[in-house]
Every structure is written in C-alpha cells, then in structure tokens.
Amino acid sequence: MADLPADILIQGVSVSYRKLFRPRRVLSDIDLMAQRGEITAIVGPNGAGKTTLFRTLLGFLAPDSGRCLIGGLPAGDYREQFGIAYQPESIQFPSLWNARDLLGRGVDLSRLSASERDEAYRRAVARSRFDSTTLSRTARRYSRGMKRRLSLAYTLIAEPAVLLLDEPFSGLDPPSRHVLRKEIMDARQRGATVVLASHELAEVERLANRAFILENGTIRAGPDLTPADAPIVTALESEFTGSEY
Amino acid sequence: MHTSLARRTVLLIQSRFKALLLTVLAIQITEFRRLASGDISAMLASGIDTYSLLCLAFPFIFMAGVVSGDFRTGVARLWLQKPVDPVRFYLCRFAERFLVALACTLLTLGAIRLGTVALGAPDEIGLLLGRLPYVLVLACVTFGFSCWISRGSTLVAIGFLSAGAVAHQVAWPGQLGRPWNWLFEAILVPIPAIGEFRDFLVGVSDAVWIPLAQILTYSVGWTGLGALGVWYTVNKGRLPHAEQS
Image (cartoon, rainbow over all chains, first blue to last red; front, side, top):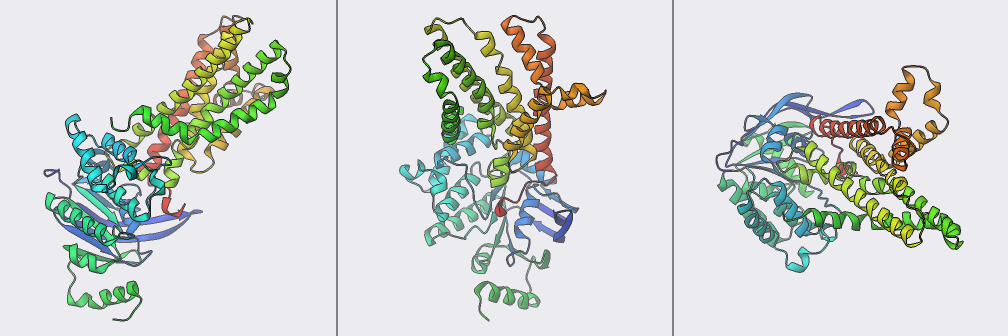
C-alpha cells in the first residue's frame, strides 16, 4: 500500500439525482483535494451531500460535470483495481451470514497472496474484537455498534490506501470510539488517504488535518479554516448540539 | 478460500429453504389425488409432473434477487469496495447459483428415476433430461431481469415465461408476418426449441443441433444482457440509494 498513489482530486464536480426525469442538484461545483498520509474531514448538516460525495468518490455515481480522480485514475477504475475501504452510514449484511463468513469473503475478494490471507483474516477477526460465539452469530442480529465494528474490520482487510468513512463514530461506545480513532491514526501513519464525514466536531478537531464544510451541496469553507470561517463553524456547532454558543 | 463455495451454497440453500418447502408443498397438494390413488401409472405421471414443475421453480428460487437484492439493500457496496470487476463478480455468482439449481434438479431427477425403476415402470430418462434446458434458460432470464430491475425482477421473469408460454400455445408469433415473427421468437422463451430437444432425447425426432443452438444462443443472450445491466448500473451511477430502501 505504501507506494500506491492515492491522492484524491475532485474538480468542479456537480451531481444530480433524477426522479421522474426531474433532476435535483445535490452537489454543485465541488473542488476538493485529499492527500496521502492525511485525514480530511467533511463536515456538514444532514442533507448537505456528504454521502453523495462518497458515492461519487467510489465511482457509484456519475457526476454531471467535473472529474473525480484517485491516484490519477477515475474513481471507479481505481476502486476496481485497488479497492477502497468504505464504511457507509447505514450498514447492511447479507441474510444469514455471520462475521466469519463476511470477513472470510472479504479476504477472498481482496486479491491477497495465499500466504497473506490467513494473516489478514486473523487481523480482521482481532479488529472486530468479537469472541468465537459472536463471530458465529448471524450478523444481521448484531447491535448497531457491533455492526459498525464488523464493518470496520471488513473494510480494513488488506489495509487499502484510501479510506472513506461516513459518520464512523455514530452508535459506538467509548471503547469502540477509542479503537476507531486508533485505526484511523494507524491508517494515516501507513500513508493512507483518509476522508471522513462526521457531525462530531470534537472528533474532527481531534483527528483531521484538514476540514471542509459542506452545506447545501457546496463547499462553504476549507480546507484550512481561518478566523473568518468562525461564524460558519459556530452555526454548525449550534445546529449539531441544538444550542447557541 | 475462507468462505468457500460449499459454505456459500449452504447459506444460499438455508436462505431459500422456506421457498423450497412451500413450492414442494404446493406441488404436492395439487398432485395429492394422483399420489393417493394407489395407481402406479398415475403416481409415476405425478412424479414426472412434479419434476417438470420443479425444473421451472428451481431457477426462479435460486436466482431470485441474484443481483437486484444486493443493489437494493446496499450489500453491493460491501463486495464492490474490494478490488473486483463488478461484471465478473456477478457472473461468477450467477454461475454458482445456476450450478446449485442444476444440482437440485439432477437430485430430483435421480429420485424420480429410482422410483420409476423400483416400480418396474418403463424408463423415462429422455423425457426427464428433456426438461433440463428450462433450468438453464430460466436461470439466464431471471439473471437478466435481476440486473436491470431492482424490485420484483423474479415476478417479472415469471410473467415473461407465462407470456411466452401463452404466446406459443396460441401460435401467436407464427401468425405475424416477417420480421415480427422472428423478433418475437427471438425474445420469447424458446419453448418450441426445448420441445424439439426433448423429442430428440425421447427418440421421436432427429433434429438436435438447431434446437440446441437456439437454446444456447438464447441463454447466452440473456446472460450478456444481464452483464451489460451490471456494468451500466455500477459504472453509470445507477446504483440505487440503498439508504432509502
């Protein structure tokens, strides 16, 4: 992973959803750059377009205009060649599959050599922090926090060079938050490009090197927030906490 | 392989167990009178009819949601974040499920044949083998619809088979002038070709290559259409919003 070019470049990206032939603009003219070995945060209220931005970065959503490159390749091509660790906000697992099945399948799909597979599987099981009984339980019956832990263990198999984490802290208890923070910092140290979308400004402040504020589908501020951006941040804080600062 | 083909097959059969049980029960209810009659020839005919109906049911049961289920629920994001070619990934899954449907059909065939031999009735192996093309054709059709339609694709495939059966029963395509009759015969499930293939196996016809070519071309065509559907959905930003489903 260390030598893999994984800088993310988003230039002039606009995205619309079409419902009954009526386009609805969700992202407008987004310019954003995320570099290797850095954690870039996307902060914004609900409906700002964070998840849409991630779907575009994965190549699952074609932009109306602009380009989305990872390591110089179109995002979809990069995903097919190298894989992208993506943890969505809402996590779904196949029915009846347990954690062992899921992590095993993740290892199978990760293009690892035979010698690396067992080690990758062992690491993934350790990351999930499940005991052997929990590992054998149907994953759909897990609590929200357990699903997040399993999802993180799955996405980090083979330690991809690009991590996209959508609201990674939601539903996690304090020990799990601590582990997640450590995983994110480890990924950064490995030289991965980490992009996280979060409501939790304290976590963003703690982890991120750069932060973009996304509102109504446009970048309002970032990457380096200056005193001039204080009113935007304050408004966001009061919106997220429901109180005036 | 950490999550082997055998394990995935077990999970697939477990997830379809209720549907399999209900199908067999429904068929047995309709066949109850013949089975309870005590007449050996009626019982044998009932066995062959049961097998024929299962040849139609197995591909629908095992192919249901083969692609659309993943797209609709968001599970596709789990698999496609790994370095995989989406078209190849879903073609492999199609092949796995087709083999399971075929294996179940062959097991049923074996059981019916054993019953026939045990009761000292004439061997109907040609008639039984003549039903196998339905498994291939219907698996390919269901896969094709599943790649393009995210909800109710299996019901659409069942409707498509029914429409084809009715159209061929009333010889509707034959009443149309060229090129419409060719077009409809190319689109509708090739029931006459499957019938000719069966006639060859039971020894009432010499024609085998033309019906076989028709059956294979039709199946490959639907598989190709499905592969195109996967490519279009993933690469042209048509993956449904799983979060909203």
